[in-house]
Image 1 (tube, rainbow, N blue to C red):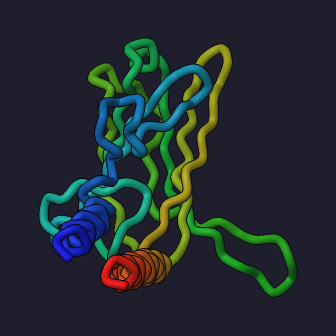
Image 2 (cartoon, rainbow, N blue to C red; image 1 turned 180 degrees about the vertical axis):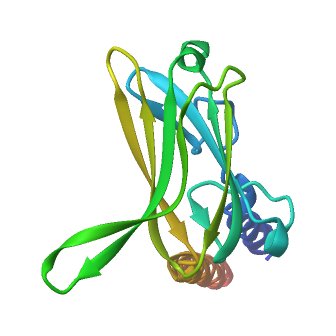
Length: 186
């Protein structure tokens, strides 16, 4: 029975590891989920929602609509010598067919010698948005990153599935443990 309890605690601990605090992936910049490649270069993204969740660092999934601070860090020094433009857009469906894009916030083309670009964005409603980063120069590079705002229903489903999976594993362990005891007593 001690083995079963230990296994239950271990599985519960593994479930707790899957938290938003792990958004940056841990283990250095190579494993950081908030680091993206733009061509051969890297950029780090962090979002904050101080009015609703304080100073917690977020990645591409923002838990609530409302005011957010978006921070783009140009990791590679060579990018700091290139002009950069950033726009955050929302795709809007139209009755006639192709979608239109509404710009939520933008930073016009300029150089960022320190490598950090900070934008304040007001997401009026839940939905999918896109951060468009354009690096100018001889060979312009464009990067489009999806931002999911207040679409946490999928994470809730993931948690429920994780808990259900853990319950099945624990149930199987208890069943096998009891079965083993019955065979040992027979």
